Length: 354
Length: 121
Image (cartoon, rainbow over all chains, first blue to last red; front, top):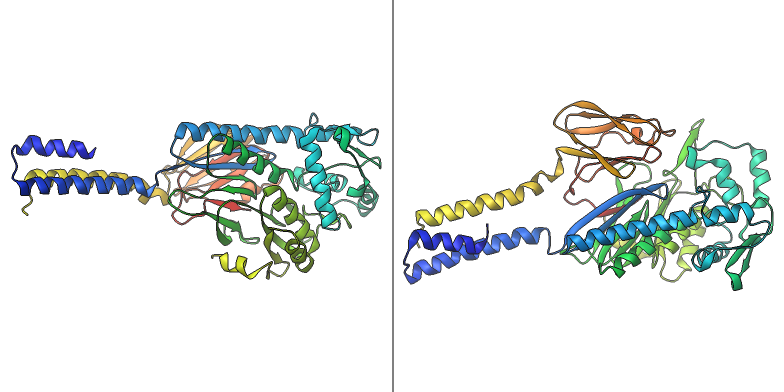
């Protein structure tokens, strides 16, 4: 029902009016406009559009705030297509991907990967270096052994020992002139599992931006890239999963124009004789890292947040916090193995809400 | 300023309109349907007011969903880890059950008041 409709019905029934009645009529119309504006205002001028899909072996969710449903839906489709493209390029599980080809043939010759994939592996190697190998993009032989993507199994100690010499980012051979990567040891395997989801979130946000979207969240599992704010607010409200209570938030943050990632021992794990074996492996030992329950990292890009969260988890609470503090624009909070919180800075601690 | 019958009628209609507009938000906490997707396609909308067991065909086999008392859970699944089954019951707007291996997603529409816009998990 429109406000003008209300006004015309008054006129039809009442005929001529005194000035007081006119004012009263105007008051009724005014109330109706205010109420309808309020009703519209509750959902904001922009509306929220949300779509999720299973991609990259996880749940991807794109949330967009926009006035145009048509534009929002088109942009979301393009963003999801971009994530699908990255998965096709970077998945070690898809035999046709460039990463699979590198893993099959990289010990024979350097494989041309194109600027995009070459650049990401290069960036991964730099974070490997900065973290002293705690995050290592060549962890592939170990993750294959543990098989967390297939449910996980406890490998024989001898198999882990045999895989360790195949792990090490320093054994990668980069050829900048041809954007090619090779392996110096036979049996090496690249695994982008701890950086590609963040990269996909970053790329999806760029696609949304190209389509005219200004306010959005792209969540690839725990990797979130955040742009702008929710309708009627200055921020998006982002929850951080509690590492031991399913569905409960450890804390929330009010964020805009940033990226946040959480890596935890509760995501992919199995239990043998009461011991939890999770997917965040220490490349030095081949075993799950034991110092933390979860690490949440805020960074300018989801690519960096993703890799840094894994690195800090493997480094453990003290070294992990030092590592995060040393990176410009990066901050975070670590839940250690006893449930205690470790912060990079007081300001972040003050930003956290229950 | 005296309120005439016509004004009262207009106000009553406006009040009803506002009530109707507000209703979906008030009821958003407890959805009456669950949307089910399989392999990225919407395949079913379950009535949460009717207790029943539903079978959903996924990529690995059949996921059985139980609806009881306005909530829904995964009763059985052909996936190896059974993480979806361990997710338990969901009944609040915005909650979701996901079986990644079988590519089955159960989603309760709407947004719970005060809930985060997204969760880093």
